[in-house]
Length: 329
Image (cartoon, one colour):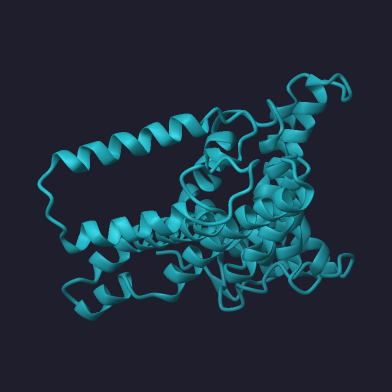
């Protein structure tokens, strides 16, 4: 459904029926993030992988049912302190820095409704940024490892681009700023309203969506939006507000495949590049050897990306003499 939705959007833009907005993918991500975070804060709002992924990203402190009490937090700190006292009282640099960081995190403003008992609100947001920035940076590095090692012996200098690359920092800045803005806004609203409400997640999620400015991706925005629609549909079924259609998933998949295959033949430029490469691998390149020039009469620009391709056709089965006929031995 993600590829089909994106393809339909690009078809509409190509035909002029849909007008693109500046930073439209950012606005779409803001709306999607607001709804996702609201469902995340609601009891039984999200389940499965989506809930686990959001809990990993924003932390369990933002879950309303989070049962991490102050007493448990302080007991945990006391246990850590006792363990450190049992060790030799050597103050090395690492221990000194750790003690300094702990003292800064413990002393500071924290609202009574905030559940991050081991940190004040400021350090809570800063730690969230550092943590997810590191995760995003490492993910992007891991994705570049295969291509970097492929050119290890021919172009050793490309190995440095594995660690120092613009995309690495963009993904890290996107994830880090999303978490820090969400946490900061949530803490601010708790201070202002003097309560912890799941409605705060709508505002915090929308503002956190602005982080998409660091990593603009229409694909991510479209994918999350389509998954959100799917989630809301199934929630409507559970609530009895939306009718259930038997084999709806099969029907949706069939329609989505038909849309993508139609675009692959008539207007390849509207397909997402990664999906086009997938079709080429799936058909062993057969999708690229079609005679698309005869389809240009339909006005979809079928041969737009295949201007240099001239098929070899058997003149016995054509009404017009082909440019490159098959030579028979």
